[in-house]
Image (cartoon, rainbow, N blue to C red; front, side):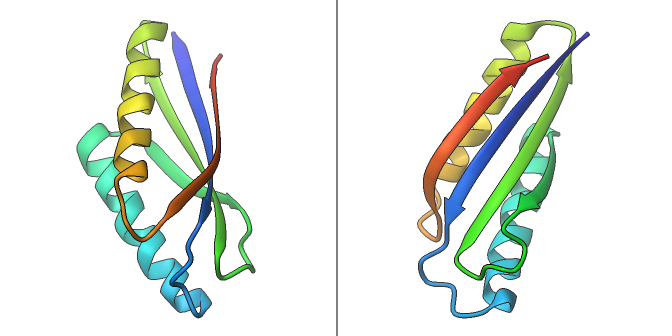
Length: 93
């Protein structure tokens, strides 16, 4: 069993409040979970309205599959106009 973990630091430039940030993140998390069946949670930056750090996890029987799924999820995030990816980190455990 392999667990792929990806941490993504985001900048949400158009967010003017925590409510705006939550709307963007809720939409993003639903999209990622529905399309890739990954677990997604905000893991840092809870009180900041233009910054968020998301953690994603994928469990697989092969490391290459977990890595591929997380890379595809990252591409979806990078394609969203409402967020800017500041930093990413991918690990296989």
